[in-house]
Image (cartoon, rainbow, N blue to C red; front, side):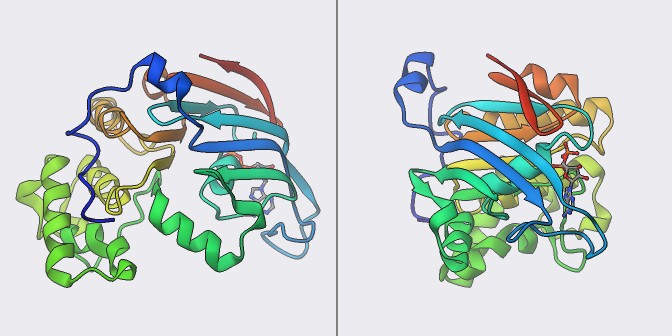
Length: 254
Ligand code: ADP
């Protein structure tokens, strides 16, 4: 898989015609999720059941950037977790590249996520004791490629996100925007078809946020990107914005 040509930078932007003819990379059908019911994880045993999603259906095609907006608690992160196979909804199906994640074993789901989904978090989630390059190389450790190849690939990705002079820096030595660039490079390590991002510009000032969203738009050109955000600038580059309220889709505008 590592030998595949790195998508962004080699491909041309996906046209509308190509997009509408391609099969969805991600498909949620009638997804309902209750935290606290069997299979749903509760924060604590004292919590009551919480219905986080109700009958949500969404298709995301390669080349699409889909924005999720809605107030805090409306279900955005739960959708991202379902897409990444980090949770199995209590009802409905979640397909990743044509495979129904809800009928996979835990191991199968983990394997699919590691190969096909890159995840970008608001707070970067970098390991503080590892260099930028080692953080980026981390997802490749499980793929069986040699250390030399991992380093080479991580260096290429850091160059791709404009951090060729920060390869050996620790996260603590980088600015917020640089950390998010490292996190995006890490999300690209396995050349995934799908990227999920939870408030990727949430911790950044406006100018830094804009440069990060430019990067996300660029790397998303032939991937399916699902991004939860409150940031108008981020939502304005999305091909579609889905608005959630209380776990329901209240609008889905292209
Ligand atoms: P958003 O990302 O839009 O802020 P979430 O998907 O995080 O929304 O949350 C949707 C609902 O599910 C909220 O009511 C939230 O409190 C609840 N919730 C999220 N995670 C858990 C959990 N692990 N246990 C119990 N309730 C949760």
